[in-house]
Image 1 (cartoon, one colour):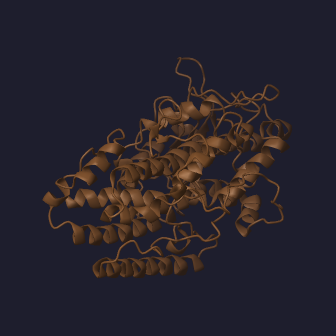
Image 2 (tube, one colour):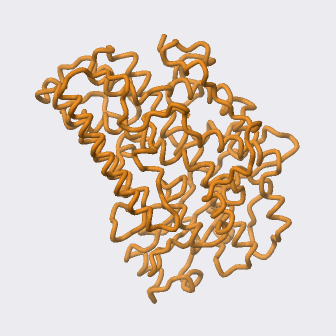
Image 3 (spheres, rainbow, N blue to C red):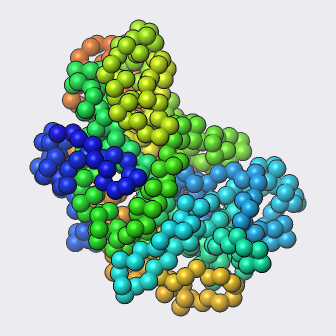
Length: 499
């Protein structure tokens, strides 16, 4: 019954089922649980303290910059050593923002310049599912500066990518009039929202976890130690994704109702993102290095990175204990036909299609567990906090991005932002997605006791003790922070992608 199917061309493979009722019973939700993405039970007096803070500070540059590190999409910002060709920013434009007395060139060399580049949205068709409302997309560049106070500040934003000589790419600056700068930042946030929803969240946690889940059910027997290790981490994933294909990302589903990348855009963005979905990019330490954000001295206050590294290490050390219990040598890994078949069934671009060593098996399984638990938690449970206040993350834009300065006012900005209907659809979705399950099982909590061997029971105890230590480190750090960061605190990380 666990057959592969390509739901849309170029998507990851998913389960061959058109509706939740077609799923095998063992992977359906418990009877009482069904996912309600509608608004009927939301009273918006339920504002979280953070949402309150967002409403008060969303338009401040330091807070805009902070979200690239510790907001809902903390995976885009990267160190910038060379400016992209199409980015028309110059030294003269930004010198007023640089507080160390260095030139832009020197700041780039010193490693104080970062960039958020939304190239993936270039050429994507905006949502056209509603004939009454035209919607627009852009593919911005946002240059960020780590100043001497260790604040990450936006210093230049470009919304277009003309390549023809003589056609100006307008670069918006903090010194521009307040409406130009505010709208430029909104465009970056709206682009960031699209990339978050489709790439960071849908593709790189939900859909990828489903691939691991199906391959596990197809290739590993229930008595296999790796099946026992992974099963808590794929709980409900196939079911939630089937519900999403039925209600959220389907034709005229919720995503089409509220989001600028609805309609054909969903497919275009995911097809592009598949090209960068590499094995290494899902290994947390490697991903930090690749973006040049792994150094704590260089870039302090990046709590997503710090907490993610601690959780990755804890998971890796647990997986390593379990693998060593069952595999006495690399050869035993190579000779395990089920494990080799599992790796082959996953067979994504650049994923290893065979596992040769214990170390490789450990990294692979760490990636599977971390993605389903920690990475999903980091990019899912903050959605209401960060996205409920619409101007901070517009789900769509109803006016074209400005091409020159001095042409927009507050009225234009209001007409760009989502209307009431779209805003309430958006709120309903981010509220529903930010809720924990009633009987949530958090990282390392395994009530089903799939393993009976004493050695694994001991390894699990050690794992939980380590996770407890991580929780305490995060808790004591958060006590000193005005804005605590807790999305990667192990006591708040569910085992699997289940919402």
